Amino acid sequence: MHFFLGNMKNIFTTAERIDIGMLKERMKEAIKVAQHVGRFIKENREQVGEVRMKSSNTDLVSDMDIHAQKHIIDGLKNHFPTDSFWGEESEEALEENAHQLWVIDPIDGTTNYLYHLPFCAISIAYYLSGSPVIGVLHAPFLGEDFYAMRDGGAFRNGKQLFISQTHRLSEALIGTGFPYSLELREKEKKRYNHLLPACLDFRCLGSAALELAYLAAGRLDAFFEPELHFYDVAAALVLVEEAGGVYSQIDGAPWDITSNTLIASNPVLHPQLVNILQKRNRKNEE
Image (tube, rainbow, N blue to C red):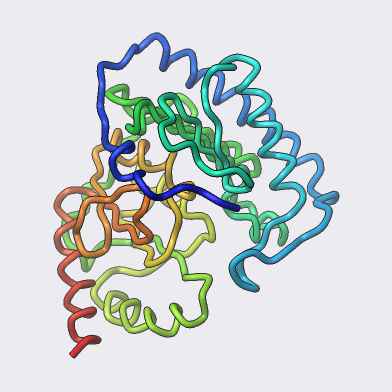
């Protein structure tokens, strides 16, 4: 897997006037494609093919991921042939100057999928001149569709979503994930140990995209993860923002596609999370 990073910060910060009709058309088709591919991976779960390791022995990819990505791209390309497409399993580089770009994670939560756990999702995001404007998640084993469009709200199966209004960290149920790297797991465990006593509890579902969708739906109060990729969360962050949430890197810096850490919550909890996680980090460095 390869993707270009050189000028990504610049091309992924450009906003422009948005054609709402064009977005509605694309979101409608993205939902249809996600549902179609969801049925495919559900019906063929016993035929995943070869399973391989990527960055570590806990980072798995199967032939089904590759087949699912091809089906998604083919389905969208039939309707939008001039758009650009890039997925987690793509071999080619991400286009440097893509104007209308689809970002795809064919199965977020591959390990869950392989182990017959229901927490996995098809993630499809649409970027217009670098700005994320559509996010679609389909959870085939849970029967849930999450979708959002810039300035159009976030929804689950037709019901509008609003982020949790929990304002005390001590009452917050926080979603999280663990790094693939064993070295980084060892380094970050103090951060987890510091935050856990300060909040209500953690939940780790094995799919960052789905946990962020749950955050948008008010099922979780916050989310943080010290290692992830932009394609893991490209669609889900549109959901979070449209549901009233905010997000950043763990140190509070603005998030962009080169970021590999993430905090997301409502606007009141967010600074509390940044503060406690950075306090722990400063102690580690002393």
